[in-house]
Image (tube, helix red, strand yellow):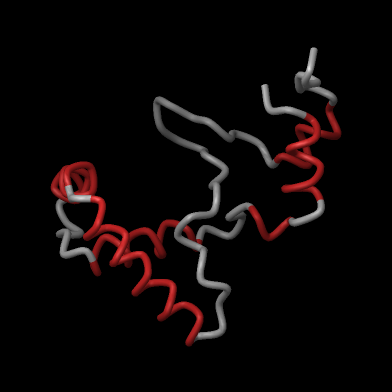
Length: 110
């Protein structure tokens, strides 16, 4: 469960804090490309980003940020949390504002 205070202050006030329009995937692919990873086949892409050294990946992210800001973006779309609709391990399955409104969260401290 996500703490109430975390949801309220980060996601409810800052709706831009969640990738709700799917731009995160394109941004993440661009970071991988800038890091020198192959985009296809998908298994090769995953293998590359899982095994690339942190410095190379960080430098690629910084290059992405610069590109994004030059195009009018905020520079962090490759790092926004994404509402997950597929995959075996899902962390955020519904928008935090919906979760907050439902009351289905744990108040910390309990």
